[in-house]
Amino acid sequence: MGNLIKVLTRDIDNNAGNFFLDFENAQPTEAERAVWEQVNEVLMEALAILDDLQSYNGAGEEIRQAIQNPSEDRVQERAWAAVVPLVGKLKKFYEFSLRGVIAWSAEGSDERSLQSHPASGAGAGIG
Image (cartoon, rainbow, N blue to C red; front, side):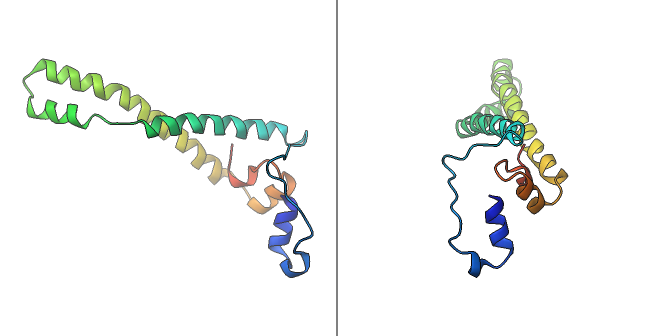
């Protein structure tokens, strides 16, 4: 990855074809392992978040019924029972996204980070 950055930031015509990147079999070095493990953990959590997002249905109908029937306790309780777990999910989604924004904004030079830790992706704000 460091070679790719060098090629992209320098004379690409004279360096074309001088390197091969094997993304499928790339392994972190010992120096990169801690960051790689953090990134892997975030990616696994991201997959779980994505599954939750894709199955998120909302509680629109329950909320509409509660608004239309404000004096019926059973309808109000049904709405609360539907909304409360969804609020927890939305909070989880928000907190996950916020961690990424904070990590990205706290990074220094992306190019310098990628050259010093090419397999980690640390310069891309991951982790």
